[in-house]
Every structure is written in C-alpha cells, then in structure tokens.
Length: 291
Image (cartoon, rainbow, N blue to C red; front, side):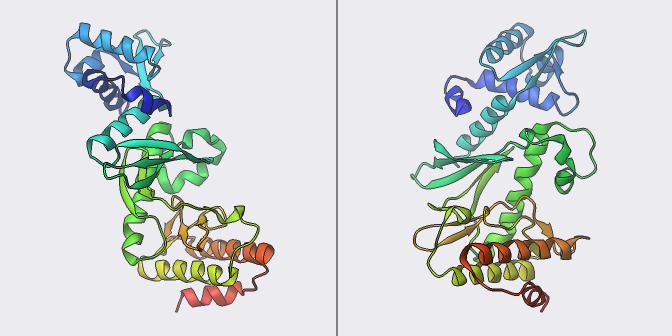
C-alpha cells in the first residue's frame, strides 16, 4: 500500500501541513496557501517548502484553475493521515497484504503491537459512480455537494457505530477495534466469502445460524443488515462464520424497514436454495422476526 510506505518518509511537519489542508477542505474544495499557513501555524517559507515536499510525494493535488493556487488532499494523502492516527493510538503497528478489493472498499490485514491480526477496511466510495448517489442517502443525508473523502469518513463511522451496537450481543459479527477517518480496524476471520464455496458441511445449519442471528440482532439491537447475501458472510474451514459489511444497515423503524428486511431474507433464502438445495419459507421466517 503506497500510503503505508510513504508514511515512513514523513515527519511531523509534513503531517501538520496535510492536516491543515484537511481542515481547510471543510470550507472549500481546495485550500489556498495563506489558509494552509493559518491552519498549520507555520511561517510562510516553511509552509511553501512543506507543500512542495508533500506535493512531490503525490499526497496532495494542486488546483491552478483559480486566481490563487490551492491544494487538496488526494486519497493517498487521506490514507496517510488515517494510518498515522491509528498507529499513534496503538491500534495498529504494521500493515499486511491486501485481503480483498470491493466496489466500495479495500481490505488489508494488519497487526497491533501484540501481533494480533485484524482486518483493516479502507472505504473507497469515490470509486463508485454518481449514479449510485441514491444508495448513499442513508450515509450523507440530503447533502447535494460534499467531497468523496468526507463521504468515505461518514461511511466508516456508520459501519463502526453499527458494529459497536451489535457486537455486545455475542453474535458472529466482527469485533470493532478502532477507526479513524475512512478506515475501520476489526476482527479478522481466516476464511472466504460464502459465495466462493462449492460445498459446505451442513448448509442447513449454517443457513439457520445466519437467519437466527439476523433475527436476534433485529429484535435486540433493532438493526437490519440491508445488504445480506452470500458476499457478506465469511466462513472458514471449521464452519465458523462472520457476518460482515454493515454499511447499508438501517434501524428497524426505518420507513422502508419491512421491504429491506424482506429483501435480506429473500437473498439468503434464494442463495441457499440455489447453491445448497436448502428449503425455506420466506414468509414464515419474516413472521418469526416480528414475534
């Protein structure tokens, strides 16, 4: 990962310039040099030197379209700030290889100082099309104009908050370890997505486990997954599961809660029927959620 390699080359002055630009981006798309000077509290000559340095390292982008030149963070610069914060908080100490790449995120393995292995999820919603903006309404509300960096930050917070509510129930969901900006650190299960298996031991048992856990989460935490399917359940060789990707989760009092819950149940029922010939009744399962 490029940001992890670059982080070792930066000093506190470089990071402070990046953070000054990040602060300025809350008010405008690009940040003028004088504003970077104001937010960093550095002399102008130091600011210019540091801007040129982090620009050469490809952490910021120069915007020359306006009369005054401005700068904004790119995704690598944002990664650097988040990784630095997680290291400073002793949440992670080392980044490992990539575990997966999805439409909205990249996932890496990582270690803390005690060599515990975790999954580090970096939101990359900026990769998705603006045509999918409706799918982000539960993240960004009615904001019409906001940076993708900020959307990624909101997405990470939304999923982390959901895990914080769900994990104490003792279900097979990732233990939340920490987060900063657009990155979440959570429990890691050495396994594969359910979709990748041609066969599993006792598929009916796994199916019932998933359904019963979703029911318990619905009844106790009042949360619906919102994107349940074979790509969001990880299973290892011993049959241990982890229900992941809670970004699209909604509360049980959401205006479309019944439709969203039905879609989740239909998805998992259809998959287990098609792939493993497990019979189920969507209507009966739905009724059990409301008891």
